[in-house]
Length: 506
Ligand SMILES: Nc1ncnc2c1ncn2[C@@H]1O[C@H](COP(=O)(O)OP(=O)(O)OP(=O)(O)O)[C@@H](O)[C@H]1O
Ligand SMILES: [Mg+2]
Image (cartoon, rainbow, N blue to C red):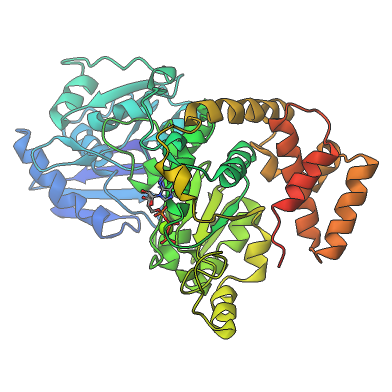
């Protein structure tokens, strides 16, 4: 007796169709699972056998079970095939092969008691199922809300093996979830940090506002305790809210990484990732035998905060160069390359020298010129070239610290940021570009036209500061964002002047 059931596997962020072929015959007793499954796939045998027994079903001990995961020459991993294998076996064993399940997709890990466990990658699978024209998608109940944000497909939340078997045989029908109500998850919970609690530092705050408006990279340097980490952590509270498309994009990555928080079917707030400086190459950029997204992809559409920037190993930092330019990271593996999105805003913080006081007006720096230059060399020129805003964060004056009044709140700043981002959204409507920092030369030519005076000023600055061609274009993009914050269609000289001022003088 032979039967076929549809499932799918997630490779990177894309899904590949997997057909589960089941054959149960009276000859050669035993259980064979073929199709290049990893250890977790192979162990499905034992999980299914036990779940089967605990569901009260009679296992076909005297007959031979052969399962093929097709295409048989593609490596497969994980536990998501447990459910389709178990259903395929049941249908074949009970001789119910007339049942029509060709319009349904099944995924889910089985627990030994026959219940279904959390399974990774459900959101991309739901998108795949809907696009491929499947009518029904059966998923573990714990993941069902995650799938239900996708409209146009029936999502069935499955609690146990027994429940789904009763459904497909018509003994007791389950009802699908209501789908597509994504807006209800965009809550307005207060942020943990608020710019209102950061005293002084108006210059740095202005720079952060510009960075948030156009998703520009920023480097904060200053003496110990001046508030760099505080400013960077408060940065997420002024970021513009995500659009639904952005939220789905980000949630897909967290779904595949298995990092979607419980009771959170969709991520609606921009991610803020702050890996420690001891993070490895794979942790930061992603990879592994079955590649997983790294910190830079988990920061997609949000912030990657690298505190104590020079403490990261140079090799790890150099890996950021390609994603910072392209907004994606390409990972090589045996079966070809794979890309993950990685369009993030880099926020880095550093001291100006090992003792931290090189730029402090009151304290004496104890470092030798050699020590300072060695410290600075830890971050390569090409990496610094990709940072648009180089900001000095001096010690805040005591009188400002001791004052009791609050600074401008994050909500007020975010309103300005969002109106600047709205201008960008309408500018780039229908294109994959989400913010000014993502413009390529074609868009720069179209949207960053300078008037004669501004162009002259920029040319002189590029010559005097010996800036690269990349810097030239990055200043143009930054000027565009400053003009957007100003509500101006044209880029004025004052916008260019401000943009130049944020470039590193070294
Ligand atoms: N401008 C400020 N307003 C309010 N509190 C501040 C300010 N600057 C610093 N602080 C206080 O000082 C603490 C230390 O600041 P923070 O950790 O941001 O310094 P840092 O610049 O990152 O120092 P380091 O170089 O040592 O990492 C903060 O937790 C905060 O309580
Ligand atoms: Mg710090």
